[in-house]
Amino acid sequence: MIRDTRICFIGDSFVQGTGDPEYRGWVGRVLAETRGDITAFNLGIRRNTSEDVRLRCWQEVLPRTLPDADNRLVVSFGSNDTVVEDGRVRVDPARCLDNLAAILDESRRRAIAPLVVGPPPVIDAGEAHARRTLHLADGMAALCRTRHIPFIATTRDLADHPVWTREAMAGDGAHPGAGGYRTLAGLVLTRQWHEWIARADQHRS
Image 1: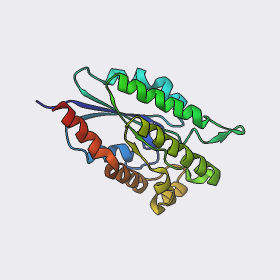
Image 2: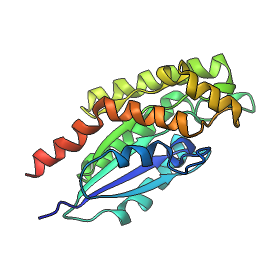
Image 3: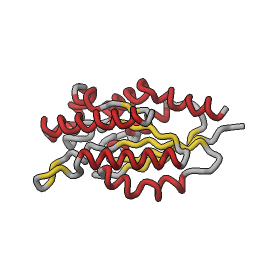
Image 4: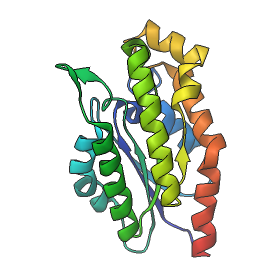
């Protein structure tokens, strides 16, 4: 019997893959390296914050799940939360963590296995934004640890990666090209992704 695996990827423009001339982003590249019969849904929306994602999450995710399927949810946001607009961050970090906790807890309640990918850096947003994003990513990691949910850190590695930074600055200052998304996909694939996929295989066998 073939297992029906359904994975929803929800988040912001980095999830959507904005800027990639190959239109694959990190999500498409991760899926290409993942074994099994997978139905995937990219629910990334540009400029979305954690608040936006929380508001739309279940009305978009639930229609894409099936009762007898191996339903999964990959969550990735935060880069937009830490942007300053009109003199204040778009979403307070404590509120962002509350939003993440609510999504993860509801995911578990609905028997949808979650995984969190940390927020990539926005290169041209400056050092203060980078510090806020790193601090938020650390809070997300701690929250996931308390719930025994996989968290894949990306912020620091990408901020220091020459391909990511070069492509982002050559574009709109935030989004890389194919090479940057390939780098982000590599981080995801080498940090708990395959273990997360295999864990449910064992659970359902």
